[in-house]
Image (cartoon, rainbow, N blue to C red):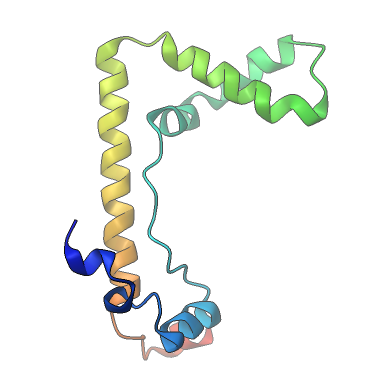
Length: 119
């Protein structure tokens, strides 16, 4: 990481006008986080995860998210090493794309297009 990335005054995180602009436009000024490979993979396995969840009858509605997460982690653990590495790479690629979009949104000047201003 560059030194300027760590300095909140340089990044605009402490600039009150930048903060106000982000609040008014609804654009988040927090840096995107790297998603875990399991969370990236589980988007492609929703149907299978739901099928396994429906087979379990003793799961209350309050526990469904926890059980879904455990099912996804167990299924991901059963994947081969090559498949896991592929999902690690895909998570990194998605993170890099999100970072590019975030940098563009935070570092570019406000748009003067009427549609963007209306938004």
